[in-house]
Amino acid sequence: MGIIDETRFVERLQFFNGQRLFASDLQSLDDFNRDMRRLHLQSLHQPGVGNGFAISGEKDDREVTVGPGYAIDSLGREIVLSETIVLPIPPVAGKDDAPIFFDLTVAYPDNSNLEEAETREGVCLPRGVVRLREAPVFCWVELAGENLIPKKTKQRMELQEGSRIRLARIEVLNCQLNSSVSTTQRQSARPVIVPYIASGGEKPEDIKNATILDQLINNSGFKALMLSGTVNTSNAGFLTTPDYSVSIIGPRAFSLTEPDNPDAVPEVLILDQAFIEEAKPASFNFTALLVVSSLDRSDLEDEEIDEVKKQIRKKWQISWMGVER
Image 1 (cartoon, rainbow, N blue to C red):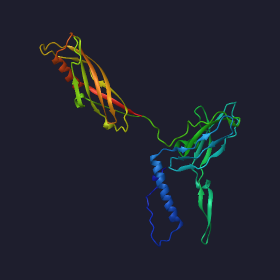
Image 2 (image 1 turned 90 degrees about the vertical axis):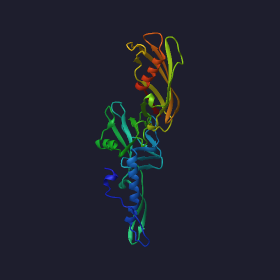
Image 3 (image 1 turned 180 degrees about the vertical axis):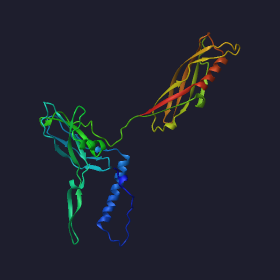
Image 4 (image 1 turned 90 degrees about the horizontal axis):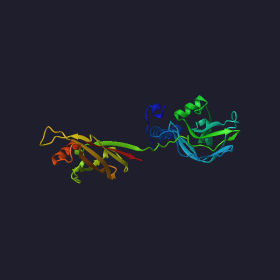
C-alpha cells in the first residue's frame, strides 16, 4: 500500500503570532514534508540505487567494503549511507566444495532500529529524544537453487516488492569469498536507457517538395527517374537527430496502356535505391533513383513514363524509421 492509499486528505499547516505550539504541530509539519517527498519518489521513480553504494571485495577476503550511497525503496523512503563501512561476510563453509551464494541487501530502518543521537530535558517533563540517527539496515540474503532465489519467503517477497534493495552478490566457500563481489544484479533507481524508435510513412503526393525528374539517362533499354522530397517526422518527437532508414513500399511492376494501341498492355519494371540527406530531429530529405525498363520492347514513350510517374504517386509510400540512442 502506498502513501496515496493511506492519506485521507492533505492538510497544509499554518501558524499565527501568539499561537501556542505543541510538539505534535512541529512533528506534523515534518511528517507533511516527508510524506510529500515520499509520494513524489514513489510515483515517479523506481526502487533501487540512485547513487553510490560502491562495494568492493576480492577473492579470499572475509569482508566487503560499502561506500556512501543513496537509494529509495518502493514506498518512496530514502535510504542514505553517509560513511564507508565494512561488513563481514556470512561465515559458512559451503556444501560439497561448492560455494553458497548471498545477496547483500539494504532496507530503510524503522524507528526501533535507530540510534538516539540527541536527547534533551523537557520543561517540567522528563528527558526526551529530539534526534535519531538514520542508518541503513544491511542483510545478507542466502540464495538457493539453480535460479539463485532467496531461501526465505519473506526476504524473497521484500525484494520483489522493492522494500528491500539488492546491492551486490557474493559466493562464499570456506568462510571467505570464492570470487570478487559482483554488482551486476543490483537494482537501479534510474530508468534504463534504451533506444527510442518511431516510424511513419507518406505517399509521394503528400510529401513536401516531392518531385519526380525523368530522362536523366535515356538508353534504348531503360530510363532513369529521380524521386525526391522532404519527409516531416515531427510527430515522432525526437529530441536529437536519430538514425533514419527509409524504404519504398509499393509495386515495382506496372501494366500500362499504350496511347496509340489501347489493347496493348506493356509491362514495366522499376528498380530503386533510396538515400537520406540533411537529417534533422523533425525531418529529412530523401532521394530515390529509379530505373524504369520495359519487359516488352526496347524503349518507352514519354506518355508511358508520365503514366509510370502517376502510378508512383498513387501507389507508392515512403516508409521511414528513426532510432534515437
